[in-house]
Image 1 (tube, one colour):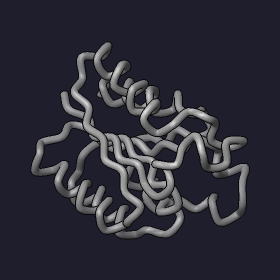
Image 2 (cartoon, rainbow, N blue to C red; image 1 turned 180 degrees about the vertical axis):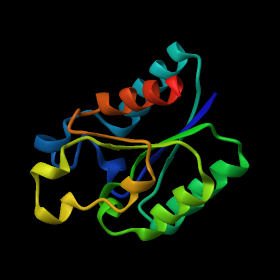
Image 3 (tube, one colour; image 1 turned 180 degrees about the horizontal axis):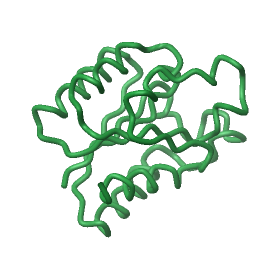
Image 4 (cartoon, rainbow, N blue to C red; image 1 turned 90 degrees about the vertical axis):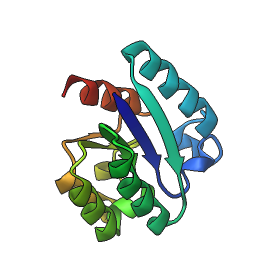
Amino acid sequence: MKILVINGPNLNMLGIRQPEIYGRTTYEDLKTMISAEAEGLGVAVDFFQSNHEGALVDAIQQAYFDKVDGIVINPGACTHTSVALLDAVKAVSIPTVEVHISDPDTREAFRRISYIREACVATIKGRGLEGYLEALRLLTEK
């Protein structure tokens, strides 16, 4: 099984950006944590991060051609703005889990809207970085 973990805008700044919300763990630490979990599950995992919506769409589409079995995506701010990400996930029909480190429903009103959610098999929010590991486990059970 092969899983692609996609992170959107500003997630490369984990550990620096608003640590009171996102914690002090860096993006590289997150990748190490996910890799260890994936190894324990016997799953191959690849990572992609971009601050650009089109690059995220390209990564989702490439996952189809690379025969990826599942996607874990934290679209960052694109969650609340991107119909293009929704359309890309719908187009590839790869089981996708939406992950958010914080719970957007408890933050600013605009963060309560998720365009991508309707194309996802699940949403995990407000569980910190553990949410990524939960998403991996969920996809391996499918």
